Structures are given as C-alpha cells and as structure tokens.
Amino acid sequence: MHVSLTPELEKEIRAKVATGHYNNASEVIREALRVSFERDQENEWLRRQAAIGFAQLEAGQAIRIDSKDQFMDAVRSGS
Image (cartoon, rainbow, N blue to C red):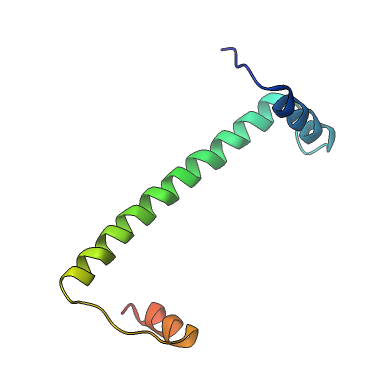
C-alpha cells in the first residue's frame, strides 16, 4: 500500500521518528490510526448518549443542575 502525504505531514512524521519514540514512519502511522479509531469509537458512544439524553428531555425526564457539585453528585449516583 502506498500513501501520499503532504510535505508538512512527512516532516511531522520524520520529527516523531527523530524523537526516538518510534522506530520508523510506519509505527507513527499505525499509532495515528489507532488513535483515530479510538476517537471514532468515543464519538459514536457520545452520539448514542446524546440521543438518549435528547429522548429523555423530550419525555420530560430531566433534572435541574445548577452547579458542578450537583452535576458530579448526579453522575456518581447515576441520575
């Protein structure tokens, strides 16, 4: 597989390899893809949670939260 990169991206990849944290450009790309896939999964979870929340709001199943402490208490209790 061949991938075309902009000169800026090539420079960034070379810089990552130069730090010594990666042995080669392939490792940098694999790590970037892993992070991208994880972000996609997190975004999908957030979309599902938002849909649930909006449905609860539409059904009148909401609670009022006026402070960060109240929010944290609600999160901890599962409210």
